Image (tube, rainbow over all chains, first blue to last red; front, top):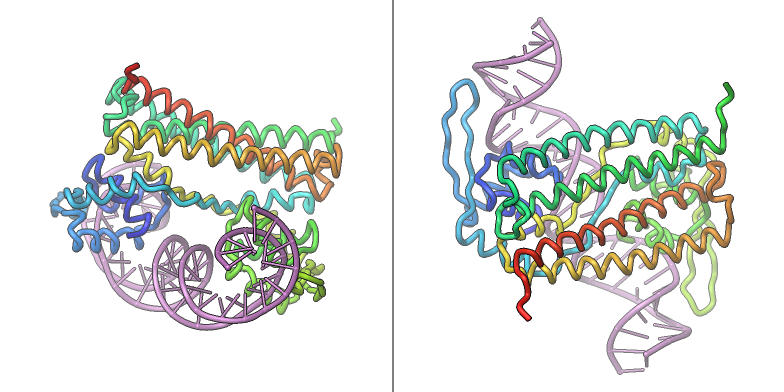
Length: 184
Length: 184
DNA sequence: CAATGCATGTAATGAGTTACATGATTCC
DNA sequence: GGAATCATGTAACTCATTACATGCATTG
């Protein structure tokens, strides 16, 4: 089993989902394309960590709703208690930032402005999601025994990080201003 | 050319390095193993984006010191001006956190304590590196035209993030305490 | 005397992306 | 009429990790 497999189990232990839905929900901690998810779901089902139910829909294509089995839950529980591997971060923006001195101030500013606007959108999305959680589950989400606890604390973390990214970008922008004061 | 290729160019435009050194320096923004780096350096040299010089050493194995060519620098410059791809973050710890309600408070605490100690070490390392930069290059590093500017602002960002990770872990720990107050 | 650091490389395998493939519905 | 959303799947390819391979010097 690889980490993506556990990510799917972790997602499904909270609530049963279709592969399509999982692809979107996974965005928080493990980005993966549907072409990787669908075959893995099939494999996990064959190994009896998951089961599924075919659901007919009108106006929409049929879907498979996957649920975790007891065997799957036991496997996940064991894995959680083990020490996690080091995180992997691969961000082209950071590579560009490292060599930013090669470009002119204008190009540099554009790069950071674009980054800010991307992260501002992320903040809005994250805030809406957190509001939804609070409305649906109340103070329950701050209790470790709630199945929404993990999702809640992760979203809070993401929100912090996204806000900090914006703050950092603004700090860099201020350094850029210093170097090349605008004439006006 | 893939992003790792540009990451190598970006690293080498600051100063010439051996493949071994690059493997370590790349840690900030693009984790890669030497088995991926060495063949790619060979390829980039064949395509004349890099050149190298064989350096004999005593007591240590010989090494190849790679430098970026003008052709390589031009390629990198063009790439920087283009919009970066979305970042990829894959962190097993976050997967575990998402399903943390499955475990007992003790296991949960251990997971977060371990995370804190890993990040405390990172903070120390990062602070030392930043101090070094300031000593070596002074206020120069806050100027975009300095070749150390990118490295400096990236390290500041990393340091912020690592400190925030610790703060977030402590916040979660406080929620865990609330749920299961220690008797004593 | 075992482990770690320096230093470079290849081969096999696993993980992940892009492209190909289909099809109805809804929104602009 | 074109794009986006829902929904699942496979094939080809690229990217990344693990394992194999070597060898000397220093440190504990």
